[in-house]
Amino acid sequence: MEEKVKVFYELYERRRSVREFEDRFIEPEKLSRLLMTLNRAQSAANRQPWHFIVVENKDRAELNAALTKEGFRKAPVIIAGCADPAQAWIRKADRRNYSWVDVTIALTEMIGAATAEGLGTCWIASLDPAQVKKILGVPDQIDLVGLVAIGYPRDGLKKEKKERKPLVEVIHYGKW
Image (cartoon, rainbow, N blue to C red; front, top):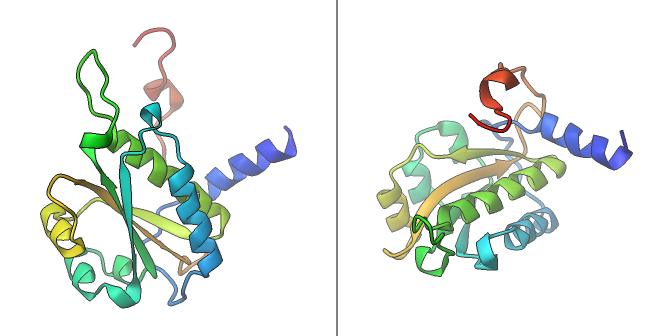
């Protein structure tokens, strides 16, 4: 296997959800690269129907109160991914709006970049979107897709072995 390819797969083997973070800030140059990753992500018809809110620990007492897990409150950075449905590509056949898909792609690509930077992440979905939108000042017409906690993992990037469904249960060839 080519070395670049091997590095890519090793990176994704290291990626895991991190729920406990060191009390350590993220270097500005690393954070800047993560934000660039968000902005370079693919989107349907290149519409880029997204907005991202970067909230650092020092600025988020109110947001922390809305988070259900204590460990997330200690993450030095939380990024809120927001979708603007009015700016998104819409599939003609079923009128499906791709704003959520596009924001999810961007956040996922940023999560991979964070892993490459030695940072841990966790997608935070267990929250009250209306409450978080109010705290962050997100306009009514914009959807809150999710939050991602980012920081240095308390126990490094050790990967616990998690059981995954066998490929034969989730992969279909040709038809279902």
